[in-house]
Length: 326
Image 1 (tube, rainbow, N blue to C red):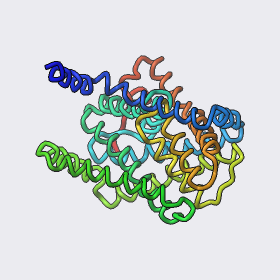
Image 2 (tube, one colour):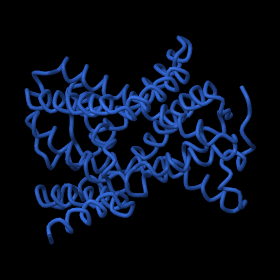
Image 3 (cartoon, rainbow, N blue to C red):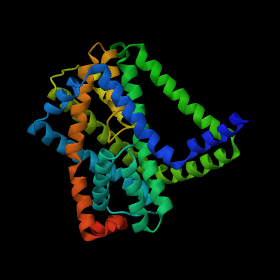
């Protein structure tokens, strides 16, 4: 009888909003603690102390270009969904969302804030949320495709382990989608969101713009990782550098981080080990990369401050001149 009472209580706890909110940062903290235990604190100190003015300036320029390209991608999708926004407003809000993602747990709260702010201004919260979701999905699909292509191309440098892990991840995603399609409600959700996805990116012109912007974003982040690796004294062959950089970005995209830290360092340390380098070197490069990103998205803090001073930060793009049509 006690066991029968215990199971519903456990299920209720697992389903509770508070548990879901805290589970991700706790998992990120556990991963970060495991990395520190494995490689020690020296690797983190090496990454933090390697940053100089030139690397910070390079990061600011690269992230500015990546932010503009990401905002352009977001605007293309939002316009097609009827949630209009001007490019300057999109850039300002994207900077703000990146800053919030960089300082808050989970790495997605900035995107949620961006969707809500834009939705209020555009008077279409549902479509604004879909635009952000599709924009982030487009970025992650481009990242996953580029990573798979580069790692397969340079497979001898990485060995079979990375390929096996990528194959397992692809199978897991396929199983999740397949499981959803078995349930009637899941099929209904998939059909509805697929229709919105086609609406957001369905035309050849929109796909071209999204592809160009996504390529620009990836190129800027790969270059930034090269800057970080160089700052800590690591020199890698160019194809290997691209592959490691893309794998690092995939690690950073795992939404169980603490202000961006945790899975990224674990993934980069692991992939450095697979290519014959030390995990500590990978953690140092990842730490430098994370600090450079944080420095480069500081303009988002300024955007947040300006909105707060004006007392209109909850109204999104209106704080920066208002959203405009095409």
